[in-house]
Image 1 (cartoon, rainbow, N blue to C red):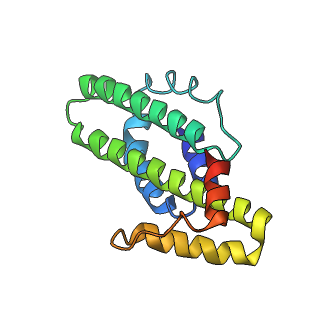
Image 2 (cartoon, rainbow, N blue to C red):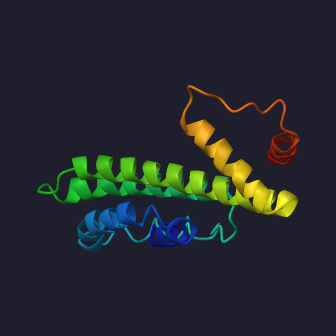
Length: 155
């Protein structure tokens, strides 16, 4: 769990606020029951140090499943602890995974376009990202060879 949080912090800086919330909400249940540390070492071996978004999402999804398993144990041991906090923690983990995937994809786009076209690639990237945000005016990818080359690189 802690290793996955550190990896997400390394990959994304916008998600650090949510990670701080997750850490503050998960420290009380993880410090009180002694049965929660054993299931945490299995997610640590596949530590994705590279900028691959799929491996980070899979490792963080496994951490969310481990946190849900620890929620059942903590709720059985401690009756005063509310299990609804773990649902909020899992939702925050899913949000941070999505944000990390978006940021990693944007970094890959920037690297590909910088290798291809330099500063002109960054301008085209801004146009593509703005067009993706506003779905009313989709960007014309048919007439742009740079975007075609970039999508071929991604696919």
